[in-house]
Length: 298
Length: 183
Ligand code: SF4
Ligand code: SF4
Image (cartoon, rainbow over all chains, first blue to last red; front, side):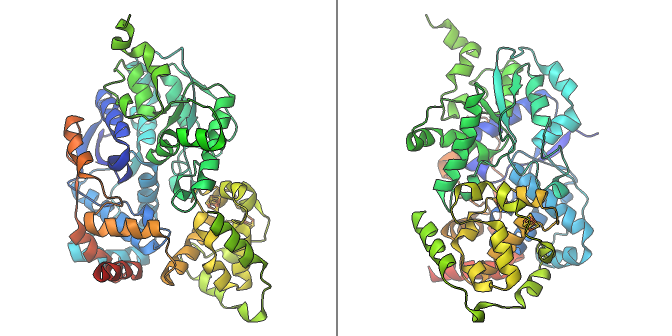
């Protein structure tokens, strides 16, 4: 077992979700996972699949071939990137004709897809490589007073035949990881439902209704926070929560945290170290008890 | 959005003429990666009933799109605005009892529509960003600078030149290049 990974950031995280990257790097370093930066990068290809499957295949294969040159497996924080790279890795490994076709494109820049690396998402790495026991050991400040809900998002689970991780109809990994922090993970209606983010650019009305439905279900069980592991799901709920409240006349005030932020708190890190300041929905309800500055206030 | 719904609703209401059927369409689809199993669909409706978008849209129905394609209503399928509403959540793909890979079939429809030039603006913007920066979004300079103060390593550099090289000959990419040249 090697705990050294090439970290693949994708586009959405550096563009809008720095808090996810900051908190992920912090917890991974604490857990002894070594990250190597990609020397060069391009979009994983997913955003182009709807308009050109071939473009997606070539972009993904280019990234995989670059990782192969480094001789390191890929770790992604974005489930969209993970899903795409995994899918293309599988397709090209199994289908010689497609592999040759795509390689004819990569050859122009002296790259070749050989199929020698694996791709994992953060969640999979935490469960399979680090292990739940080690995560429990890393907890110095159990979050026993917290009751939260989880949202896996789609691309970490589906399509099952390409992802092959956890049970898409009843996923357990994120729940286990949440409970490892000492917090309680609540069940609610429609846990595996899509956040709607990919449809925002086409119809934000439909997409916001999906997000609203989710927040309603999370509110019904009195969750103190919603825990996500995807930059797009996070944007969908955190950035839009206020807008959804206004549009549909709802009241939520539910902070949306990245899982690494939750784990980081349990590891004894401060909200400031974990970039809680970047969140749109005020996380104070959660952070009050961890913030030394807050506690010292008269 | 209202515009999209109304237009599509009207499209659906127009009577179908015999001349609209293209009996070869389904066989063309069968040859495209992702749509190989389209003829297996027996219209059970699982995809539509489990589709989160169908729940909130008056017009988006994956089963109907697949039925229309099987019947050969090529133009109706490819010109449908609602095609672009799919969130690619893959629920339908996982639950289809006939292994149709519904989301992949929808993607094939969209790819064919895009080849005809029907491409929503978001995709054009992302494509432009890709060939200029290597990233799908234009990451503001400020964000890149802020990484230092946030204790993050520098962003890996995108290499637009190599992207242009590997994508040469891909229909969609050649189209983006043309837009770029027109600018
Ligand atoms: S779930 Fe599958 S078989 Fe059923 S209608 Fe949809 S595509 Fe057809
Ligand atoms: S992938 Fe698209 S068609 Fe299928 S269930 Fe999700 S939104 Fe609906």
